[in-house]
Amino acid sequence: MYKVLIVDDEEPVLESYSFMLEGGRDFTVAGTARSGYQALELIYQRKPDLVFMDINIPGLDGLEVIADVYQKFPGMVFVLSTAYERFDLAQRAIPLGVFAYLVKPVSKKTFLATLDKVREHLDGQTRTAAQDEADPMRRFLRKTVWQEIREDDWERYRTRFGLPSDKGIVCLVEAEHSATSPARDFPPGAEEPAWSGRIAERLAYRHRCFFDTLLNRGLFLISEDIDREVMERHFTAAVREVFPPPDFPDYGIGGCYRGPELYKSCGEALTALGNKRKGADAQSRERLRLAQLRRKIGIADAGEVKKLFGLLWGDIFAGSDFTLAKAKMIPVFMFLLDDCSGCYQGSAGDPPPFSPAEDIMAVRDMAEWEAWSAGAFETILRMTSLRRSRNFPLPLIKAMEYIHEQYTKTIQLGDAAEAAHISPAYLSRLFSEHLKTNFVEYLTELRIERAEKLIRESRMNIKEVAYAVGYQDPNYFSKIFRKVTGMLPTQYAG
Image 1 (cartoon, helix red, strand yellow):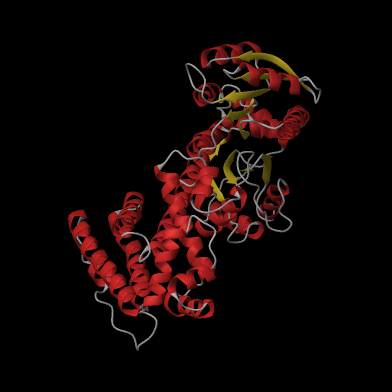
Image 2 (cartoon, one colour):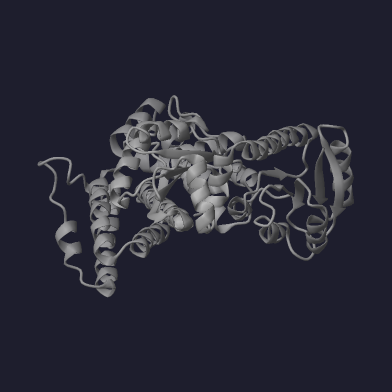
């Protein structure tokens, strides 16, 4: 039986959860707590396998309690329970390894389904522990190699496992899949955890390789005195065969050390992995910022567009040295110029008002950059405004004004056409010719742009945001939001 601790300051919740838990399913209630400090005390005393944790409890909040204990009890499963579906809470929970996130009131069906998933996870942990005991190499890779090894112990390990070299190098691969994130679509034949074995097979053509997989991370020990750069080339090639782009995962490679100091290679590989993940996150954020900016310029108000532009170049300059950051900004301005003028689409168009490459590379410091970029962006905004006022027929402007006033309601193409005193077919043609889009896409972009602002600047939950921008089905809203922005509303950081 798995022991469960329920933490909530509401007596009806404690009683409801206890009743559903005592109905079987291999779980038993080991205790209940009504405050953060009481929860800490019971966790240390009773060491439950599963903790249902309310967030808004007296004293320490639920996430603070989890932050205090999750590293001390790595096998403990935490399920958050809260009355509010807020993306900021989900963001705080993910680094703490929270297994699931339940919004109260929790139905019996949802509660029992979550229990089934937890039980499957805990059963897997039990099998893993048994495998560790039955497989000495598995235990060596999961525990021993991460700490300093005595010389005499190292010689015994070399003999026991038939390690051909006194030195080795550690490599780590992390695929984007965990209990707290959506399942990853692994490439054909690379379903978790078989992908790590396939990587090891490819490495084995050249090297003596030992490997293990824990959840979404694979560890590979190469028993060989080999240069790190050479190993990185071989390892990259092996990973790419199993995970071709765009599924290529993050990985880290340590230095080559003698056996007693292999823990250093583990640490270096883990650091390299973390740095790559940070870099990938930064690149993803830059792409998202640029996509948002290109969508909103000419539609959103100038103040919000300027703010988004500032966030974009702020991220780029914060994550790269000055020269590289300038180089990254060249295509940004080229995209924006082409969007507002079509100047790079053919020889017949008007020439660009400035040369992004020449002007940006001549900038010498941040003061010059801020002055130049502000002026250049103002030029782009003016061009966008002039093109819109000069090229948009009056019926299209009236239709757009109607959409901006009524987007929170259920509106159709015919409604906007009636407001503009034209036929739906003619309005559809105006959207296509002048906006390069259609009515539905324009309305969707506007609604998602408003939703992004509400998520960033209000305390509304996702359901409330969906209703506020014209979607009656929150699940459908989440699907559309992810299609437009590349992430779920709960993941959106603004």
